[in-house]
Length: 136
Image (tube, rainbow, N blue to C red; front, side, top):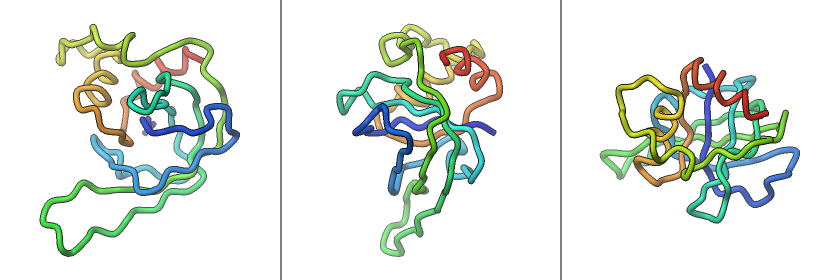
């Protein structure tokens, strides 16, 4: 399975990325070492959307807090960059894909990343991973 992360990226050209205690949704908690991951620099923090494809070097689940009844699973990951995006893909390009049942990769990304504005790690389909590969 491939994954995508939308996060606050301090250096979009870095060779490695580390993200601590990231929220996970849509299967994101299953991320593991060796998985392919697409990195989106969050527009909420001044980023530009898709910036890199990488490989997960490490993944560690964060223990749930016993004092909270409902909590979203969180994971810390480190990523080795394999490629930089050559074309833009972000909120502006994806916002018109709103037919949640059309099966398009653009719609999957819009739904998982931008329906809720929070940063997160998400699992993505093979079709969406193949679509994203076209940006490198």
